Image 1 (cartoon, rainbow, N blue to C red):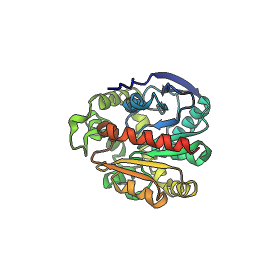
Image 2 (image 1 turned 90 degrees about the vertical axis):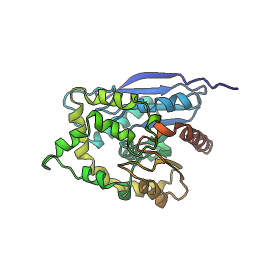
Image 3 (image 1 turned 120 degrees about the vertical axis):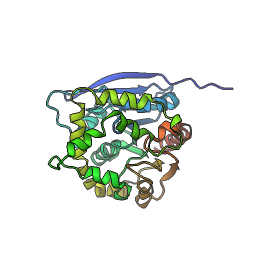
Image 4 (image 1 turned 120 degrees about the horizontal axis):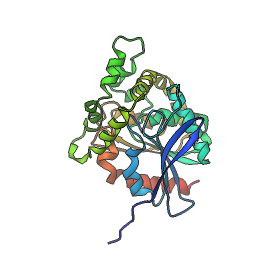
Length: 293
């Protein structure tokens, strides 16, 4: 029996225009290993990729930053939270690390951040791994549509958003739609809640929630980008996601008919329950994309 050692990972900070961006980076055996930028979702941070990095980081350079308002990243006083601002910081982060070509893994909030990067720098994007990262209106559940419709002047909007930032709300995002919740370790939602409860974090999430409608307005632009650039794409999707259900995955095939699509009987955080199935798909995809560069 051959044992593949767990990847060595470093944990660092990069300074980007006053934002101290925390990130995790694997140290693969090969200097020319394929590179993948891992863009996390709500309400999580780079820690959601720990098991994936342990599994694949010995062969690939995997880089996972925390956005402003998430995880260990720290922002200066007065930072204004929006999806444009998150993309600005991650764009600066990519430049700070000297990355010029990489596969982008987009999950949940990672989709609006990642597609903004792609719009600005198509030359950076060697391929896409899309995991419950929505870019189509048919991928929005009724609950998601109601949530996205909230505005600062909507009566009760802040209370509705803050209700999602509780421990029950956070845990529910992990467990809803999952056939066997015992497959999900409690560490993820517990750590997420720790960060959500830090001073200023709830206010950051409220600001991002009421800004989310701007992402939906950009869907046609992102779809046009996909049709124009046709990046190699792997789609791995939890079919029972309460926010971004299965039609959101199928919609990508309209603009990327050659994309590789895999649907899984699980919820929003598909890596939590199906890492053994998804990790080999990502490995084969990275090898294929890098060989074609």
